[in-house]
Length: 303
Image 1: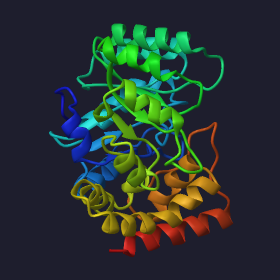
Image 2 (image 1 turned 180 degrees about the horizontal axis):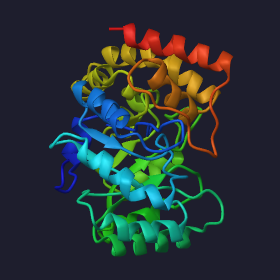
Image 3 (image 1 turned 135 degrees about the vertical axis):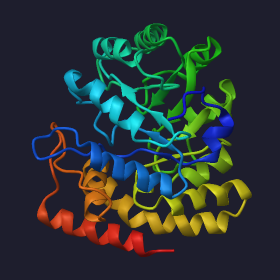
Image 4 (image 1 turned 90 degrees about the vertical axis):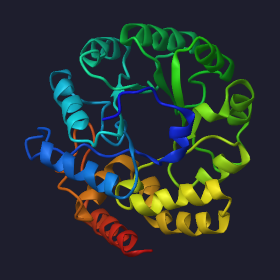
């Protein structure tokens, strides 16, 4: 696992995979299946893995947090960047900061808390977490009204932010007043598109932000990485063709639930046995699973 600080060049060099966290039938973490997911992603040329929503770090037990960190740190290759998450509750993230100090992750993402927040309160909580951790953290902007762009800029200017995952969903990603303002007050090289392949071309070309995260990359890391390479090379026709290949599975994630669909898609594609999903989420129904399996297998077969 990489231990050196994250650079803007690195954010742009690899798609940022956001994988699930496999468990056994008793909901215990399963090291060997997690290793399969990591190695599949690495074998496809992707060298950055972010454990957040798809890994359901929102609901991870405090008693298993250190075990989860150990698995993802030790099962990854020497040069792979692994980014775990903390939070979203303030008390949770502060307790987790103590555990994280026993590991050498170069940064950690703070999960966004929906509701029960204010702009100033989020900024204070993020600042206190970074101070407790002793290194800059990843800021995850997922909801409108979570943090104002000017507040984000203050956190960046104070050296508290490693990079920013921007994931506010828009009907038209090209029309985004928040992102337009954000890139005026924050270096776009510190911002990555956080909603998969579908808005990535627009985000990287119109707003000039720096790379993208993906869940479906866990199935086809080679293809997703080729899309990033094509965007960076200005081959937008090739990038658009690849984006269309990912769309059927992404559409199911948007229709049903992004985390639930990816969790089972990885298993249904034969990559790893992800096991049951951690509550407070639930597994797909039979009809849903059949549709996801078809889309996953189709994605695996595309070139």
